[in-house]
Image (tube, rainbow, N blue to C red; front, side, top):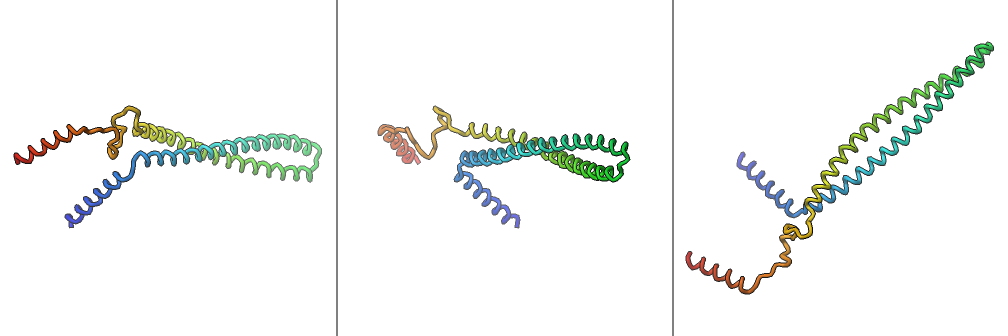
Length: 178
């Protein structure tokens, strides 16, 4: 049983190595970078939307606080003039506005937490993306770099007839001494 496991593990390792050679790592890396850039752009867009929504909520909250302050003054007037029915109507509006203001505050806190989490994720992703870009730059062939030539294409290599003759003589000598 252990022998079968070892053989299957060896076979899988050989298959993975073969696939790694077939796949071009620089192309895969560039594709991964493109995907990371797209996800990063989406997160940045979401961050801008959250910031815009937070700004709108802050404006609404300020408006609510202004209206509540105005209602307090109106309530003072109603209490001074003993207008109980008017006071009750104004109290109802004030309670509704206070409830709405509390809902806005809850929504603002939720958005602020989401924005904080998104900002942290953007920072982490920015660091990872820069690391991937640096790796890609290292894999890109540099002009004049001897490693830049692809091993599968012997471009620029010229073998003279004399080199072939010398190699042939060496091979004949090796075979005659064996």
